[in-house]
Length: 271
Ligand SMILES: [Zn+2]
Ligand SMILES: [Zn+2]
Image (cartoon, rainbow, N blue to C red):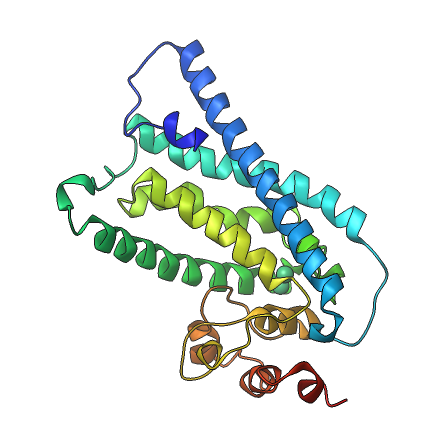
């Protein structure tokens, strides 16, 4: 992966010009990587949706705003790339916590890697839940309303948000190297995972309804965030359902809806 190669554990201190070049190269790698993933996932999900209309979650329709969402998403991804590259650059310069070196942990390095990755997922879930709830407050909702133009989400709506909304929800990737000694590869892996699962969460069609996506399991499926777009008041998390269950913001019909969607499409939609 390009940005793994240009992001060694610690970049030597060099002149301002070469530091700027390192920073720019890292930023462009993050930007093109995220854009490539956005379009690859978007087209793959759109193609699956066209083949499986019976898996559509909401029956209502809305005006086609895909072109506007893609334009806005490109701007947001440029911002997200800056946040990700900023965190990685600070870490590479040694300005953050020193990342854990998993190599000496062999043969358990994969286990340690998974444990650290899981810890990052849990931390980010809390960051996203509270940041997202903040964006729904009376004062800040105007900075998040753009994302909610999509009442029936499509994969292209995942990154369609204002600069303030994007910063509040995604600054985790800038901050995490300062609070968790995550190796750069795991930070990048987490962002890629977040990008893919975020787009699946906006698919508008349900492909992952399963008993493990509802109570008593903490995992969730596409229906979770789809209900957030449909109702505005519920389901603020995006990785686990734990915070919404604890804080009483889980959509009242979430578990039942997932259970129904586990059935074959004809039975699930009652036709
Ligand atoms: Zn929202
Ligand atoms: Zn959304």
